[in-house]
Image (cartoon, rainbow, N blue to C red; front, top):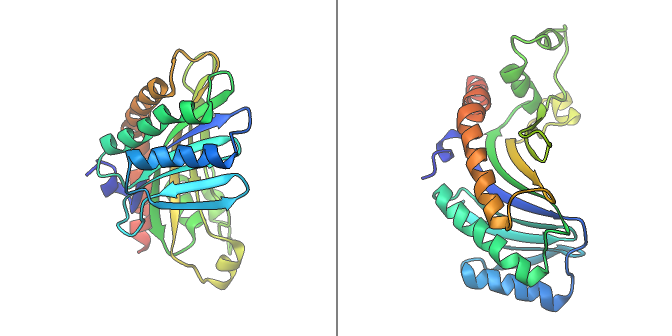
Length: 248
C-alpha cells in the first residue's frame, strides 16, 4: 500500500491541465480520446456526460480504489483514488498525459498551467470548522477568538500559497476544505462527511523547462512528495488526525 493511505480515510493523486483555449468538443474527438484511455485501462468502463462539454470516465467505485479521467471546457483531469501504490497512480496519470496531446490537440502554446496534487480525506461527524480550528489555531493569536463566550466556529479553512522559484512559475498551495454549514451548527445535527486537506503543486506554462507534460509531471510529483513527507504530514496531517481522534 502507498505510505499515505494509513494516515487518512481516503487518499488520492490527481492531475489537472488548464488550457487557455476551449478543448475539442466534437462527439468523434471526445469518444476517440476516451476509447483510447479505456484501451490503456480496460477496467475504466463507467462513462457519463455530466453537463455541457463535461465528460467523465472511471472505474467502478465499489472497491474504494479506482482510476478516473475527465474532460471539461478548459481542463483535462485525471487521478487515482486510494491507489495501491504511488507508482500505480503515476502509471495512470502519465499515460493520460501521453495520450492527450495527440487526441485533444493540446500544445504548450495553449497551456496555462498544470497541477499535480495530493488530497487527504478525514471522515468526521461533527463541526468540521471547530475541529480544524482546534488543530491549527490553538497556541496562535487566533485562539482567543475561539474562546469568546457562547461563540461557535462557523468557518475556518486555512489556505497558504507559496512560490518555489524566483519567477513564481512554480507554486504550491495548501488548503483545508470543511463541509459544515450554519444550519448544522444551529441544530447540532452533523452528517458524516470528509474534511479534506489539499496539497497542490502548480507549474505555470510558457517559461517552464519541460518539453512534455510527462516530464513536468515527474518533476512536480517528486517535489510534491518531498514537501508532503517533510512538512504536510508532520505539521498538518498528524495534528488534524489527532484533533479528530480526540473528539471521537
